Length: 308
Image 1: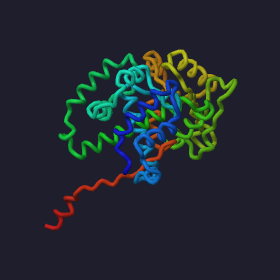
Image 2 (image 1 turned 90 degrees about the horizontal axis):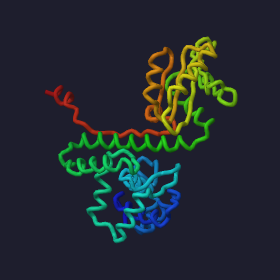
Image 3 (image 1 turned 120 degrees about the horizontal axis):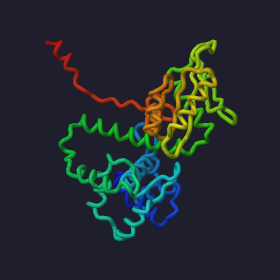
Image 4 (image 1 turned 135 degrees about the vertical axis):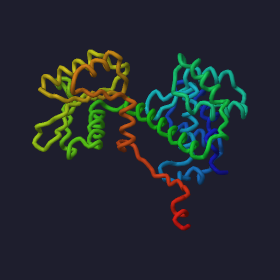
């Protein structure tokens, strides 16, 4: 049989993870779902048209994405899947096979819902009701294409943030410098140097904007769990003063408090980049991300008009 659509992967993944409360490696879940769906060895070799990934792994990934958006599963670390408490309860309450309607709800209702925890369930259920009543058939192909591209970008953004949260601090600093270089800072990659470490004075990297190093931008790159507050941004500003620097970029995987943002606006020469913007820049400049071209046909009216 051909590789089933991604909605068919939802229940096998749910059941496999329900039997493993501590979670499992994503690659093991892929194989378990393929076995449950009786996908042949030959079909498991099928690649996406882009050649970027095996079809069955891609569809398993989308199925797990839907479980995450429904609040039933999560990725506590990169490449590892685990049911949330809501997911464990859902599996216990639905020990019989899910109905087609239940699978369709998981597959189609939650794609635009942001990933959430239990505290967000009420808000998510309200959004689900709105989406459930929106007829996809009324959307034009261009609208559906745009929505698909937005969904892909959102999913990759979330994957990037999950991955960045698990990389080593020194590697994260190098990633940030790679992004800034792709954006055009520094004529050569060697113009961007990582200097973080013990006694770094709150500075993790420096960018030479000219060949003689007369104009520099200093960088702080920090993985962060909670929102970055004013004290951290103010300390970075002090570190810039210690370097007699006029320009600095503070980049985090998290967010900034209102007070931190207000402080940055009250002084000159500091730019704050949060996790969402960093992930967006990584996508736009293909750092840790590959982009593929989609050729969309459209009638060239000018061509026919010119022919009379």
